[in-house]
Length: 333
Ligand code: SF4
Ligand code: SF4
Image (cartoon, rainbow, N blue to C red; front, top):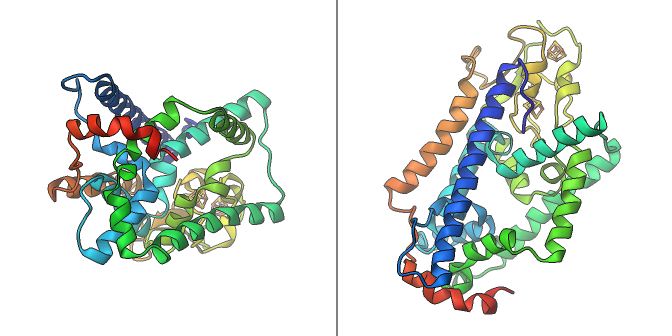
């Protein structure tokens, strides 16, 4: 997570990231209790199933999106997965890749790991620029693979069969078990990624996350961008030195890159007043705290719209989960 400093955006970002992480952990605990109740045959769960858990099903959400576009229907089994997916996509279209740097729990943990690594070792490694460019391509290739398999190749009939099948119904339980019943291979992969995150800033987000790649491409259309006023800029390059995405902020009038996460670290680093800002072209001086407020409001508005339109709660009942749980070993692979 972002380091607490006297920098206003950095502090705000750390607070937002921590609150969101706590919320996500709460969802995980509640869902774990719900699944435990269903597995143990309890007559009723102690807590209701939290629909937010479907935020961890982005590939299913992409399938659900295509199903919605083709049929006009939002599939009822895990509708919150689509609501969260669309909300995050909309956030990127309006407010850069802000989900990645302000809300995503994986990004928060990755930043936290790197801060810890830097404190322990006193330094942060940098990958050679040419290799960095090559590695960054991996996440776009992974995105391309998912788009080909789901958006291009999957026929409408197959989409319906996938979304109606027990595999999709219990995908949230399988995701829970991914974390709570880790295989040795999963543990080894997570350990390697954690080690890489300790020494390289945002290793997963920067090189491997296909979700971030999609949001980055969408974010290029965002009216909010980092804009630099060349008349007040002294060319000190502090903004570029601080940018976690290694962007040449000091050399751009407008940062349009898909790699900009909207973290505002560059804005915090600039010693000149009103030279760097995250703003649309038509808004010269947005209020301090305006962008973080927008990010949080956009997320809340997306979820509220899903709830208000009746596309938040799954059509699966507790009895359905109890019926499906014994099928888990047969639909896991
Ligand atoms: S350009 Fe600024 S807002 Fe964008 S990633 Fe770099 S530091 Fe963050
Ligand atoms: S930190 Fe500010 S003054 Fe320095 S190069 Fe960047 S925009 Fe210009």
